Image (cartoon, rainbow, N blue to C red; front, side):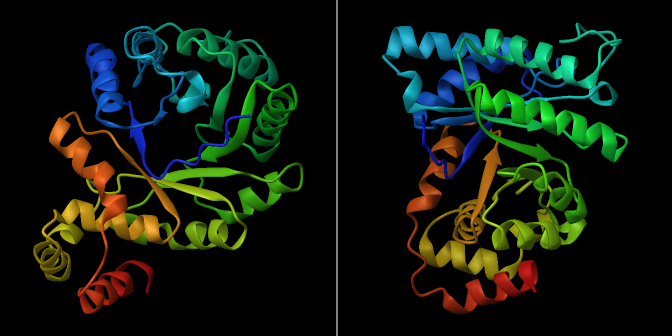
Length: 275
């Protein structure tokens, strides 16, 4: 089993026809983990697979060297004018089976490193049915880790955990929801991998905060790198969807930054985010 534990993940949403080239570029810069979804409304999962096939054939990348995460998106998150990965009349269980089969085919792989519910369903009973389907896929070996995205109530995680522990949570992490402190703390306390999106774009005031700017200046890095480094130190795996190759390099380099002589700045930033 692939036991890769990424420190940063390349996000593939909203890239359209550029998906193949951007995923290829990201991996050539050094990314080894990506996030997508079987949701044609916002993702081209098929073009992610095309990029991975290109990387394997032209750059000798082995499947066990990289981490693929995708999602089952319920009908509320789909565009009915685009091809759906399942039949609307099917049960949630069968919808997930069909969506997973489509994802494996799109991504040209026999297994997923991580498979998430894109969101809770409209009712807890429906969410539990979906969770049982993910458990079955995990038991069958088609997916290694299972989890859920866009979940901001820890009671959902507790309820799902009564069937099987949630292994991954992927949430908006930004100033507008006070950096999701309650769910982040629950994940930290219960050894659940917490992934963040909107990490930079959702917190523009944080990027220009004097303490962040001072730390970046002292360390000769960018404010974005300071934030990525700090969230990684707090056990968060950030997503980045940049299309800029320099920013790809900088985002990857954040992990290697040594936070020396910026103790006061880090204390201030930490207090702002985590209280």
